[in-house]
Length: 184
Length: 118
Picture 1 (spheres, chains in turn red, brown):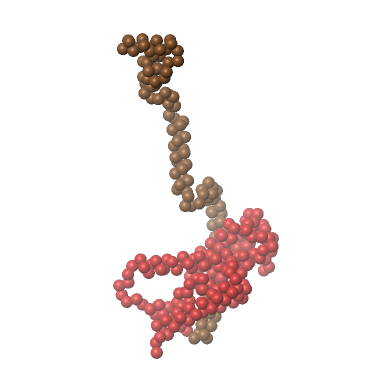
Picture 2: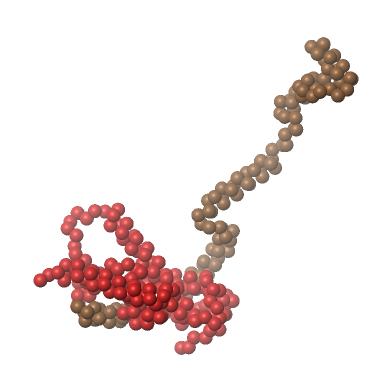
């Protein structure tokens, strides 16, 4: 299916059919991107809806000559970034103010044991700051180039490289701290 | 460890959710609902959410002031006490109460008569 830039112009004019067509064409891409950062279908669906909602409320900001799919990817990543930050803040607050655990805390790896020790890798990846996690996932999972990541995040390529370096270093440190790996 | 991580990223690549057939309809319904809400709350959308209580209070005060202006009778210029007393005051007494200087000999005479009468 090829994308027609005219669809954006029609959607900017408020034509419902054009907006519907844009959602139909780009929802698989948005779902795929959001799936990279969130593991539950409900979260992915909610965020994908938020993305399209933002897209149509700001669609007049898109110039006719602008790369719409690129702009949409930027909106999607920004929405994911905001949600990851919110989740991180919520979790931090819950750890401080939430109910105290009476029993011994269960190691995350015991809960998330998956074939091939991926539970450990997942916990280590989720522990990364969203600023580091997003470029790493875009590079390693989404397989974007440094230039594409820089464009999507609105930062310089040097900045992307620095973040990728820090993300890998921090991920390695998180993995090294994992009790599963410390076992002789 | 790196090979394991590569394997992990590979499985992450495969983990993708697809939109269900009704996703587009849900998005369009949410958009339509939001547009109708925006139409209902048009005046409030122009105000920052943090400033809304202040704006609401200012509007209530303004309306209250307008209502007071509309329903309360206008006060006489010479004050409420004067307004109550004025029907019983002679011209001379009025001049004494207001403290005005008599500008003519007739008025001065009137004052003297008033004071003598008391």
